[in-house]
Image 1 (cartoon, rainbow, N blue to C red):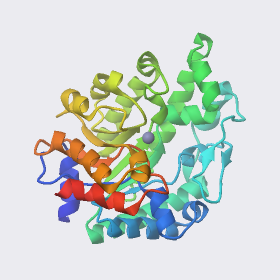
Image 2: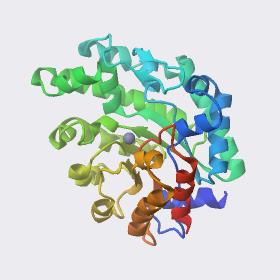
Image 3: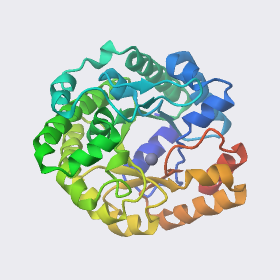
Image 4: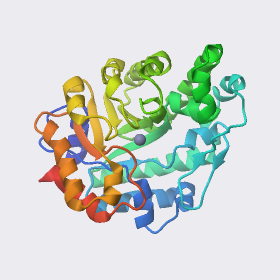
Length: 341
Ligand SMILES: [Zn+2]
């Protein structure tokens, strides 16, 4: 196995590696720089592979993160999704199926019946082959976790209101169990491509969206269950949560998830204090800085995170969330340099 792949594997296992690996959540930027539209990207495995491999080589990244939008599983589950020409696909805010009917509709969905999922897995398989030939660690995003998928399928506003209403508690739990099985199936499919790691977003279970109490009531047990289920299947993975998770960091440790990708609103020093030796951090530089900042500012922000973990392990340097399409290339270059100097 190649040196870089080995390095990233060891970093995700929490080892104090000789240099901090760098990953970028960069599909929006990669597609623009490769001269494609988001529509071309999401509809063609060829374009997915070309855009992601070109960006990986251009910026000398250690990892490839394949990610296409936040509506891949939702579309396979029958959600209303918008497909703009040059923006990532996104589920509509209002969805057609009422909460009480969703669990039965969703739980046995055949993901391979979705052309979008099939294209995605084909691209993943080819990226894995490329990664093994070019010594790059391949992370295939399995789209959304149980909580975020339930949120998208119900419609964001509707779901947030239902969470607060005791009358809906059973329906929500039935839906979360259904979306859990869909998400688990997607991890299995992604890992079967030969990927070194899978990941998923449960962006809406962070404290910028729901309260810590709500996280503990509806989300934490399923994160814990997923950690056990994926461990039993031998699937390395990480969980991405947007925004601020400072108040639930000890809960995240308790889930047993081996790695979290956290946004800049979460304090990396506190992650180190609470989670070092327990989970690996992927993050957590502000993606907006890559668009609005200077290379010096991005470099300084990345160094700040690296300096907390350097020599001690527990970090893969990444942006805290998806980099915008207008990310400046000199800023991504400065980011990579910060991990290597
Ligand atoms: Zn995010």
